[in-house]
Length: 104
Image 1 (cartoon, one colour):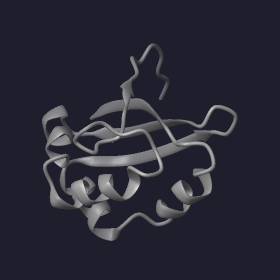
Image 2: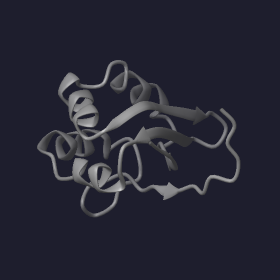
Image 3: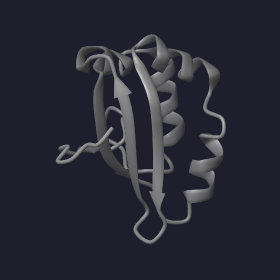
Image 4: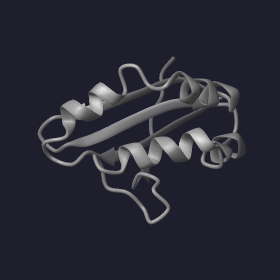
C-alpha cells in the first residue's frame, strides 16, 4: 500500500458546490477508484485559502494513473472543471506532496 497526498484548490465561492458534488460522489466513480486499488480516500478544504488536501491509499502508481483513462473519470473532470483550476485535458491542477513523517 502506498500513501499518496496532493493538493488542489477550489475557486472562491464554489466551496459549497464542490462539497455537494462529493456527497456522495457518483457510485460508478467510486467503483472505478476501488477497481484501480484506491482506498481510504479523503479530501479536506482549508477554508481561508480554498486549498484542498487529498489523501488516498493506493495499490500502485500505475493503477492510479490508469484511472485517468476511464470514461467516468473524464466525465467527472468535466463536471468539476468549472469549480476548480483545471489542466488543458480537464484534469484538476494538482501538486504532489512528499511524505516526511508517518506514524501508525
